[in-house]
Length: 307
Image (cartoon, rainbow, N blue to C red; front, side):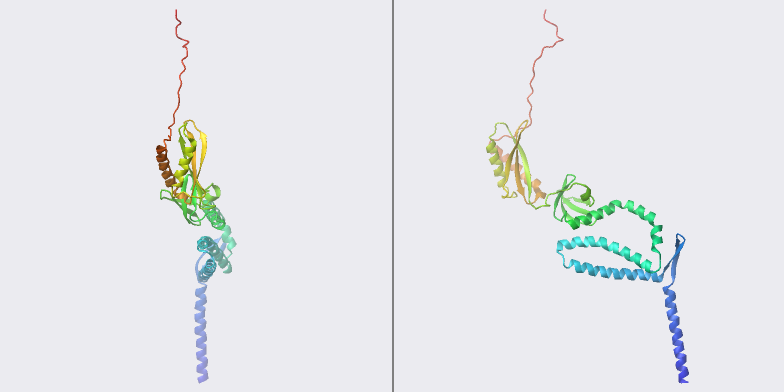
């Protein structure tokens, strides 16, 4: 009897296990929805969705490990640049993982790609400039042609770069406005970078003095004004150029070096105030534009002759 009971119990266990396993298999192969692409049926099952979710989770963990390993060995400045590029790489990796997962699940991804070709072309044309911005951002980050803190001039506006993203670059202008620049502009337009080589830049202030002024005295006064300004560097020393004999004045330019060209309008303004003060003290005149008009009397041919 005991042997019969054991046999019956084992049979029941096998039936239950087979039933449970059968339910799991049925749920695994459950078709959620079905459609056709170019005459080929495509079935979206529970197993396919779970595989995609699992692939996403595993890929995310691996990508985070890779990012942590690489950024741990980079400097702080390079770390932010790598993270920006890594975001773009992450999206591409996720797309590849989805395609591989669908292919391994038995779905012919060639049919999907072929059927979506027209859609991809339309999206590509619509997002052409978007991808140009991304490519431009990658080039900026990799070749270090632009860094956070650089002072640039674009379309007549001067700004200090405070953020470089994958698609746009942001700079703060001299009037405290944010200038958002698409990154493809750095590939197609001419951009002046004041601080690409070093932080020191040379600036200048132009002034005209009246004809007959002592030019050597003018030179001394201009150099003195520059040396007394605390924002002007002592080395390299400021210098003066006699630019030209103008129509109404002798044209001079004072050249000097500063460490922060972003605020150079304030420095130039202070120098102009000082130059005007020193010129008044030294009796040096700054003329205004003037013209001499000469009239030459001519005989009127239409006037009657004296009889």
